Image (tube, rainbow, N blue to C red; front, side):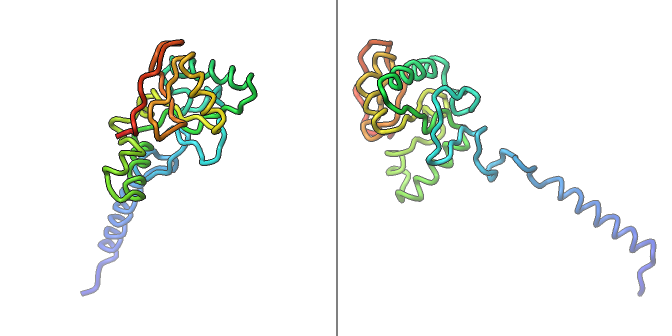
Amino acid sequence: MPTSPSRSRYRAAALLLVLAALTGCAPAPGSTGPSAPLGPDDGFIESGEHVSPFADDLPAIANLDPALREAMQRAAQDAIADGFDFVVTSGWRSERYQQSLFDDAVRDYGSVEEARRWVAPADVSSHVTGNAVDIGFTDADSWLSQHGADYGLCQTYANEMWHFELATTPGGECPAQRNDPS
């Protein structure tokens, strides 16, 4: 039996409404949903990018605990005055970014247990709370390992010479390093 023109128009209109509704379900460009690319709003710093510890306009720096950020910046001024390049390779991270790093580590190392030795899950990461910063280059790491306690900054993990936290009072003694983040 042939379809009447009004019934065909009704079906076409209904189909257009369904398609329009489904289009509204797609994530918007720049979305921060789970599958959106990581970006500066997540604290993401491109591999190989050298970020100044004074780049307070970047979330990776701006979202650090204010006392940590101030201590890092004072240390950076002195390290630079001593002739060392001092850059931030990672600072504050969103939970989404940290979880992505942890998931990558599980894939790379083959187990959750081994991954935890190198990357903390989002729910326990000091980067997510803004209480940790990773510093580069190696000479700056060495300088900060020797002088960091003067600013309250301590290398907290023996297997991560770049990872520093505000773990003592300025001029105090750093606590013993933990073997790794696990």
